[in-house]
Amino acid sequence: MNFNSKQISTIYGVMLFLCFMPFVTPPVALAIGILFSLLGIKHARVASYTSLSLQASIVLMGFGMNLTQVISASKTGFVETAISVVFVIVAGLLLTRVLKVESRTGLLISAGTAICGGSAIAAVAPVINAKHSEISFSLIVIFILNAVALMIFPAIGHHFNLSQQVFGNWAAIAIHDTSSVVGAGATYGAEALEVATTVKLIRALWIIPLSLLIAFAQKGKGTGKIKIPWFIGLFVISIFIAHLFPAGADTFAHFSWLGKRGMVVALFLIGSGISFSEAKKAGLRSFILGIALWLLIGVSSFVALTIKI
Image (cartoon, rainbow, N blue to C red):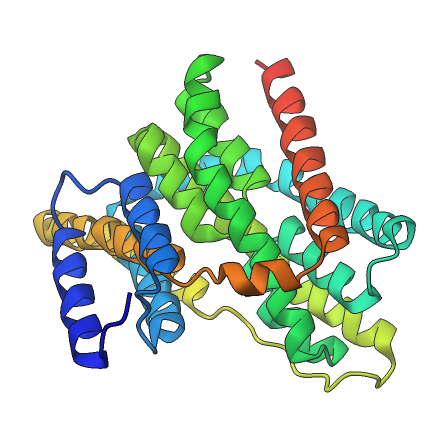
């Protein structure tokens, strides 16, 4: 469809308004976004808006979290997160060689799968001096798998009757991007959302040591720049503020609601930002690598978490 920039802005404005309505759930928002992409309705600045809405929403949702429960989830999720990160990175490097995927693309996909999708790719890319095409291909593979995970994970969880806590941990470990983790958690339930968000952000902190390790291994081959996700610190601060000032509970509840609806907005923008023409260019081997790693961490973490029950 052919729309001018003003018409597209109007259409997006209406959709963003609807994202704050209760009947637009995370999966619905993502599906509508994908439909927009298929129809060629895409805002020129969708990528920048996506990052902003995602990070702001995560910080706002921190105001609705219980510090005691967050600490408990952090303790139980740290070991699983550490094991999964190392496991996926090692497996990714091996599969990159087996499938003969370009080494930088393989490392970006592995990092995105192991830690936090697009954020990890954005952090690692300048360290290894990745080309724009390599970054784009990696992001496409990760984003498409994110979209699939957001739609099927809650259904799988309900089919196997997973508890809120188990599902939250599984989603945080097995789904790439923070937005899709939060979306899946929100779809499954309030407790699952809290556990998934907390464990996921613990997982996201691995961006820093991984980037430093890669920078050291590169020995000057890359630019040495590391993009640290500072919004994680703001998320932690918002949790502490809500804990230290209980008198503001009503206000903090409004902030939390705004964060949850903002996440719906982010999911819509992610869906509308998917480029299917670019997906075709990513190459079959890159997708096979991404799918293999995703299935590996998804199945292994599911088995490990359900055996622990």
